[in-house]
Amino acid sequence: MRNFTFHNPTKIHFGEGQIAKLSKEIPAGSRVLVTHGGGSIFQNGVWAQVESALAGFAISRFAGIEANPQFDTLLRAVEQARGERCDFILAIGGGSVIDGSKFIAAALRHPGDPLELLTGTRVTAAVPLGCVLTLAATGSESNPHGVVTHAVRQQKLPFSSPLLYPRFAILDPRTTFSLPSRQIANGVIDAFVHTLEQYLTYPADAPLQDRYAEGLLQTLIEEGPKALAAPDDYAARANLMWCATQALNGLIGCGVPQDWATHMIGHELTALYHLDHAQTLAVVLPALLAECRERKRAKLLQYAERVWQLHDGDENSRIDEAIAATRAFFSRLGVPTTLSEHGLDAEVIPQVLAQLERHHMTALGEHRDIDLQASERILLRAL
Ligand code: NZQ
Ligand code: ZN
Image (cartoon, helix red, strand yellow):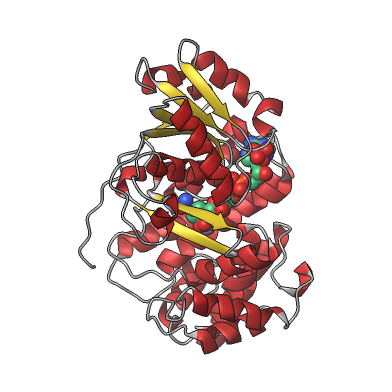
């Protein structure tokens, strides 16, 4: 196992009715910028709960952080928060609202051009941030990462800082009951792929991290379809929510090699063709596993055995079956696993490769050997 430092400072309040804890978690006297997306929080009763918990606080509400949050939108929020002298941010929503709010938090304390924060400049200060999660998927509620979309550059720009961990996250599974099935499925796939990207590399003498990951994968396989089949199944929503948080809160990735190539290629597909984040992962991941099967051989066999209970046949057929089972799982959730199902053909490949090159994504994977030629082969397999 490699050396690591693990410190996740986000306090989690999990379960029904926990939104009421907001009044205790936000420091008294704060001027709160409340951020959210479109209208979902008004339709599902989340806003009513937040409003009542925040009675007595000075609130400035910023609406309209879109899926794949846009840089320009976030700059407007920064301006509003400055004008209202906000000193705390409460994000209500999924990964997009929370990521966008992390950027706002950093931009409010950044003396230079906010774009610098997305192009390598370190975050040195940030306004404190808390969140109410309404979509289980990204893990943004208890991690230090964010992704902002720059429309003109057609680029998704990741950023990260320990200063951007939310101070607290409220996870009430009931808030997810209003999700359309597409977003439930997206969430299951995002959490599944986050787990695989920290697990499916090469053996690293980390059996505990392996078993954490296998536990998450098996739970997602069991609970995902239940949540889709029975939209009022609280237990399934609760289990999915806790899985998604743990899939990307840093724990399972401690001390092990990681392979974020699926995400990096997927980001380009979202930026260019506006596929949902998880839709891109469902297309790229099975193709990447097929392409990298020799380098990932030992872990693919472990995955086949422990996650999919594939014990029979020779090694190659077990690997084939594990990749097919992964693809079938995504399909069962209703998410396409090929580009053609999204109406995209081979003409997109040169454009994606050009963007990968422009964004210096030319040495991806746990061995940094997914160069542009390998990405091309992955995209060809994904057609
Ligand atoms: O805007 P509203 O009306 O709220 O609608 C949202 C949005 O349209 C809707 N929604 C959310 N909660 C709902 C709901 N609808 C009904 N009921 C509810 N309870 O869902 C739509 C999608 O929301 P979004 O936040 O975009 O989804 P998700 O959580 O999947 O976030 C995706 C974003 O997170 C980034 C992605 O790149 C993408 O920009 N990621 C962030 C990561 C991180 N911070 O660690 C890692 C991930 O890999 C990912 O890259
Ligand atoms: Zn993701």
